[in-house]
Length: 132
Image (cartoon, rainbow, N blue to C red; front, side, top):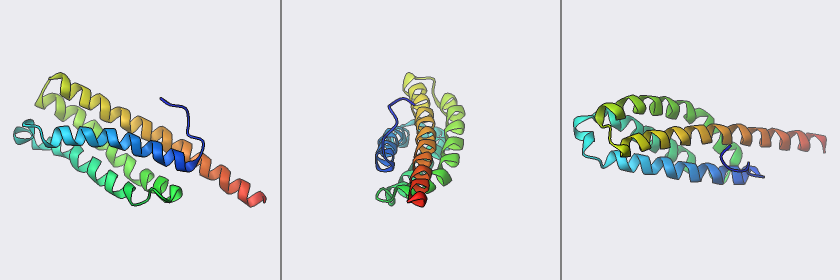
């Protein structure tokens, strides 16, 4: 993990939200770029980040529901990121696009790690609760 693992499920959700903010900035860069006119397929990552973000933001106060939704959405986001890698390099070889690809892939990796960590936290809490 890039950062120390958060200590509670609530902090894990907060870390995920910070990662999603980075993905949102990639979305904004692509959405408002001139290249979208000639390469509308770039909008795939825009839609995927938007969909993931909107689905997660309604659950920030419920870590279990948030992580469950992240588990549902992360596969689609990863798939969109992989497609974005291909589409971005066709649209432009400019450093901005190269960095956007790295950024969104890093977001996916971090979210995956946080999801696994958060699920382990919730499992430990359930087991602790069952013993009590």
